[in-house]
Image (cartoon, rainbow, N blue to C red; front, side, top):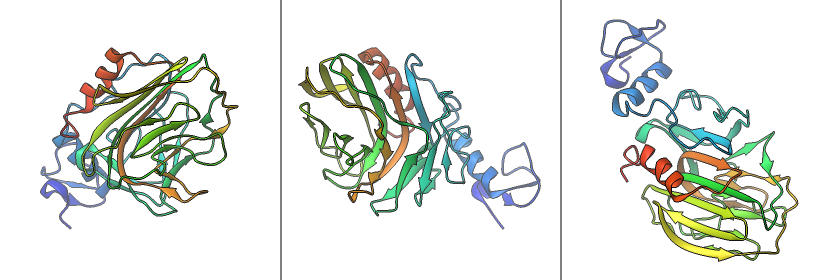
Length: 251
């Protein structure tokens, strides 16, 4: 059977390129394709201060090309459970969510922490959406109070920020809460701001990727990388994240 890069899919391993003599498994072919087409993306090059969760489908250490676990490479062990969503090695690797009620990533040992008017967090995601809706891309809809990023806005009680993501186009979105102040960045450009000096979230609410099935809020999208921080990223930090992966996504 002929695999990617004209190599053979078989039962023995070959540490050389797929076109070299020998036989690779299908999974090894997928990883070889990623290394050949996106060779610079062999390690996560992002700020580490305050990093709580790091998922990147281009890295074999985070997603090896098969299976239902999206491994957290922040060092905290908050691995994601892939529910019926599919993987593609294109663009270095991404998870495809078809918008169905059974397509999402959940976490058994990670929930959103307590949010107060004075603490901070940042959400970063490289995504491509195929709809303009109020459905969950990151975060949750149930139970309340909910915190969610959708294709049309970031919704946080008293601090909603509207911004419609372009359809069928890879972008980088970073949501930054710095105490009372919220900023919505798209491709390092500030698109919206908000202020909230009173809302408190008790913590323990779900953090989901691709949708919240409890409310049927599911988003048709591709997601390549998700980072969560418990600090407010600076513009320099956001730019570092963006520049480290923009070429992979053709941005």
